[in-house]
Length: 278
Length: 109
Image (cartoon, rainbow over all chains, first blue to last red; front, side, top):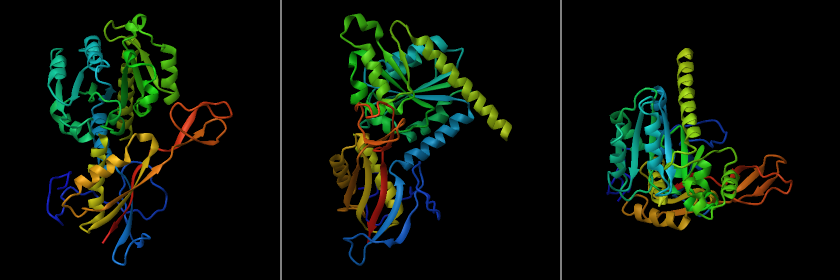
């Protein structure tokens, strides 16, 4: 059976095929989402007379990328800044959201999409604070993808000029590969995880524009080398913004809030510039 | 487990390109930096293509070694996260290879 759409019989035509863009030019496509097929003249060495080798040259995740770009355009048109919060289970992603909502809402409109394998627990925590929230349960899935977000944007309805927080499934590996249409990924790393985590799970740090180094109020109780951890983060991603903070006490979060405000300003200016061009 | 999602997406792309033909081989490139396990890809590919036009097709995986360019002296060096600085002393790398996730070609009959 096809894992994508569930169809079972041979030769069954899938209704969810891609648009094929045929290009005549020769440059290499390193970006997103073209699928262009050159047919006929590429024969594999071990192919018999009847088999043909078709050169495809496409990103494996092109379908997700297309959907993510659609989400991004939708969000941009509403001047909404979406942040994809990633990090290990228990690193403090939901607590960071609670703190941020507590501080910025309702001055800044906020909406939340909560991703977890099971339960509505996180959505309930956020709902109590009065912001629109939807829970996405991924079941056996270990990350959120762009369709899961796209399906919920209209019904969630983040207000114009809002911050949309997308809390990903607690996981340091898979979410790094999947763009969901966010303005930026933000890694939440807690010092109880150890200072070598950025080197052990580098791709998530590399994919993030900012990192909240959480639970620094526990520093006196742990053998944690803060300097070494910061070095490790920068080794993987030299230009990343790092916010050492505690979501429990609130210390260090002012800079994070300032960054959020700056992102909203930037989104507003970009939307204005786009209107002027039109 | 992101391998399952990758395989689902791959199968979709292959089906679109094969346009109903029987697929015998699928060639992909996977960069060494992405924490994607080739054996796991093959296992899911085999499971997910059962009773489709792709059943029994070979999944040929080219693992692309990571290579980075030193931003100061421009030399190209083998790369892994946490590696020692460049022989020139700089420790600023631009990754050139190792993050590929591409469907290269398919063989149909």
